[in-house]
Amino acid sequence: MQQLSDTWSLGADAAFIERRFEFSVYSRTVAFANAVAWLATNEGHHPELTVKYGTCKVRFCTTAIDGLSENDFICAAKIDRMIEDYNYG
Image (tube, rainbow, N blue to C red; front, top):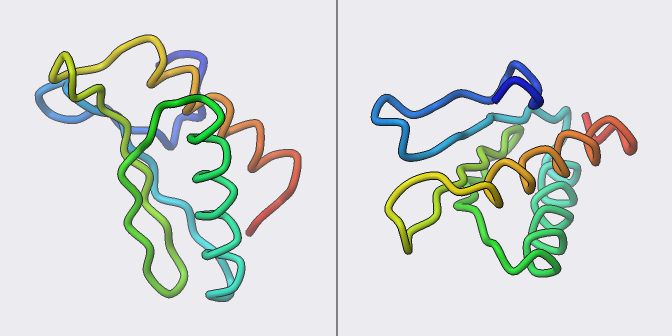
């Protein structure tokens, strides 16, 4: 968690991490969700995405172990880097 953006939060039971991303228009929200989907497909590790007009919530949990794995944190860090590099907001 220390290596992620401080906007990621740890679930109360420490079974997941999530972050809510905000966007100025719906098209940017969808573009971001698609970029996350592309990243997730390449990693073979798929988060839960909740897409609304100006927000996309990303939640990582490894269902096979019913908790968090190293890959959850790796994928979250890649999303942090993607947001910084491409300024989706």
